[in-house]
Image 1 (cartoon, helix red, strand yellow):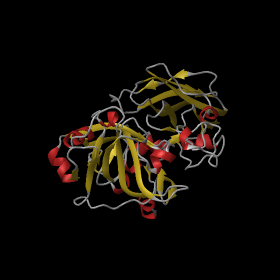
Image 2 (cartoon, one colour):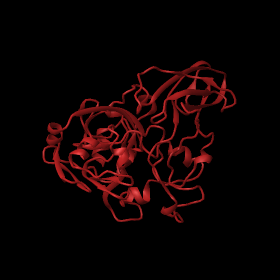
Image 3 (cartoon, helix red, strand yellow):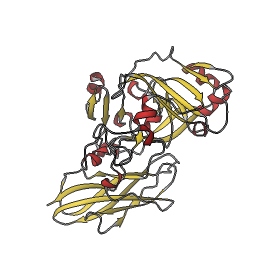
Image 4 (spheres, one colour):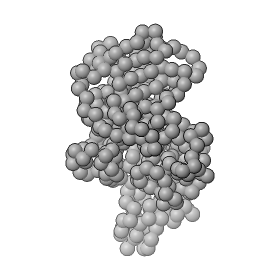
Length: 364
């Protein structure tokens, strides 16, 4: 959507129709709570312009009392809840995988991620009010008001699902505000789903239907698109039955400063970035100035991190004259770390790129 591109001239735009863009990494790292203007935008088709007062979300399927709720209804009937949570595109850092071999999708740098405070109501409260069925094997399907452009399939309303167990955790929201202000159009106004810890695709924007059912969504995004495929598959030979639906996001870290390709004065160099471990704590971050042969432990910045927040880190390296490959890796509270090479996680869709992040710089 070219009108959005003109309103966001400071973002790195990967496409205008659909509109997809991310911030420069220095701006992403500038604030622990990402400014709305610097929050990545992922669209799958048109960007609806919905009437805030007239729009309603239907709650249907295996429920005792189907509902049709406006934004005003939600605000009047249910307790308001705020959750600080990262949203991250499943294709974040896809550019690193494309450097190994071509993948489908936009060449996202590490900026397809952001951290915000979301305001809304717990989806669990709405499901309880509708008398939703309970039991193992149930799912909650979401349908948006946008028409997604589906590669190799007819365009259709955007759709995904999450397990009912996740939907009832209390932190999954029907949100109407972001960082204390009403949602903007590109971020799902007037109402969106926020599913902390899951790939951003599960956080349906412009939500218009919530359906409790005994199977995952059959929509293109759930059944065919957002799947992790084994490395032997290619676009022309892929078999959706061999793909794994992407839900939780992996441990990841990225260097935001200095920028790739930067020319720096030799000597003391500040290196800063983010790390994310979904609902586990980031226990340690290591940084190397020589491609990963020797490591220095970074300082984790105290931010009062919630379970769905990210972690900011920084360190100072002594950079000698010449080229240097700066590298970062994170460790979580379970003692797990990231794979070393993008070749180890390559897949033709370019999802879940979580190998060590590398930035080449020149010191003079």
